[in-house]
Image (cartoon, rainbow, N blue to C red; front, side):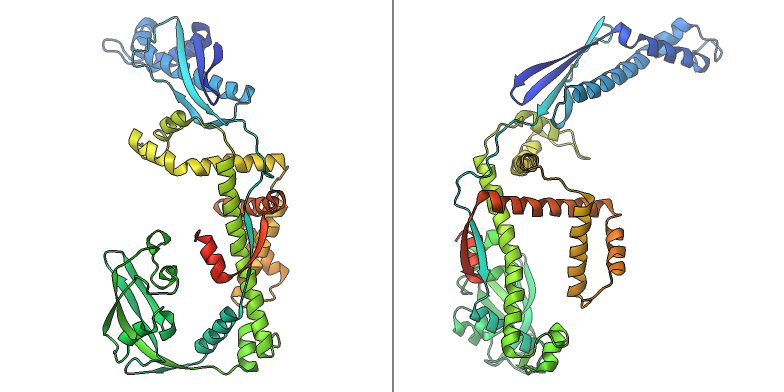
Length: 441
């Protein structure tokens, strides 16, 4: 058999395989002999059919099967021996007029290659690493929410200026249907809450989303509007009142502190505020890290130039998956997934350049940390090592979980690499400023 590579461009090639009679005749003859005792041809009893008739009836199908086996195995070995780094899998070039009786059978497979490119993690950039602080406004607001949460709700007949009103915002056209609790200080214009004053359970109040809140992004929390729809949204939404309460605030005492954080952890308002600040800023740090990772990802995708085997990948996308895609659908799917593919290649190159490897111990350590954090959230602050490792073992026995956690470990290692190499500018901001920066505003 003769096999060669023919370049189409830098990242697309055709593998041309020429199969001759010697490559498959022995296996075809063996299959014919195996078929003879089982062959049935009209006019002959089973097992007594002449060999030439068996070959005439079954030979073509057997030949095609055996040739395809030879081709498949040779293709696999050739890819391995040439150390070809493929995107997708080889695609057979279909020839409707293929002549199976020819002395030389020529098969062609198109392949897409992983591009070779330079990755400069230290390239000049304007990436910002945000350090998000919890300001007094945020901390005081959280203290008040705690007092309301653990206070006593006093049902009311009608809405008053100090009421907490529970209900559901709806707008069928925009798919808004979200239950929430509102108060007078929620709205940008305090007069908006006057629309609710005097209303009862079951009443419906209609407000317009335009300029409803100080920050339009609150629509995402209060009404679960997507970020794409936030800006310029101007629709009427109905709020159906389901409960009206005033809150008798919980007293800030040791009993409440212990209930919140465990016995003796916090013993004063100052310590409570310090704990809120610490917990909030830890959470903000995680969000800031995710933004940093996203910003570096975007920068590397835009600044790292390389060609992809675009036309090959579009054709390949038509053949994979349970549902075969039309050329138009494959075009859409490629456009949707191109950035992800580019970063997947950049990620692999970054890990190779920096010799980053994921070991089982890395995975076990990461999983153990996650399990302890989750248990702490549910009040299990001092689980035994035996309890934790038992859960870890069960989690890591699930291959889907292993894949998911491995991706998180990779992201964590890449984040640390990017912090070091990209050398972003550090900027301290409030949470409100961070939210504005996160959405590019």
